[in-house]
Length: 90
Ligand code: SF4
Ligand code: SF4
Image 1 (cartoon, rainbow, N blue to C red):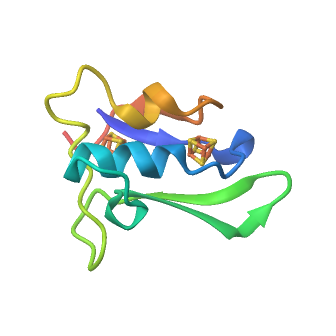
Image 2: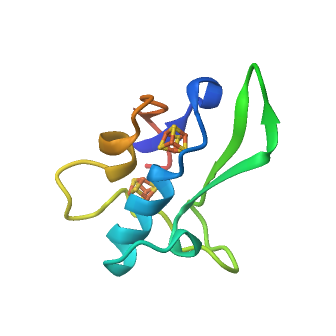
Image 3: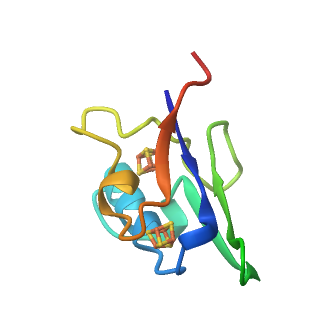
């Protein structure tokens, strides 16, 4: 399973980036997130562009589906329920 984003309802609060970085490095630093919410591509109807890095990227840690957590933190803490699980990459 992987996490996918449906950004229509995204407000750009960046909580997902913060909790993802906390998972990876134990502190809040959005530069260390596997999620990038690009508000500069904000489309009023479709929301911002949300990228989840499942492969190695120059800057961002790879999503490990919150290995060892009870559930993916981005799913648990996004106030708008933007993230959901989908089959893939198995
Ligand atoms: S936590 Fe949810 S609403 Fe906030 S930026 Fe991330 S995807 Fe958007
Ligand atoms: S599942 Fe965990 S590691 Fe992957 S993007 Fe969400 S918070 Fe980050």
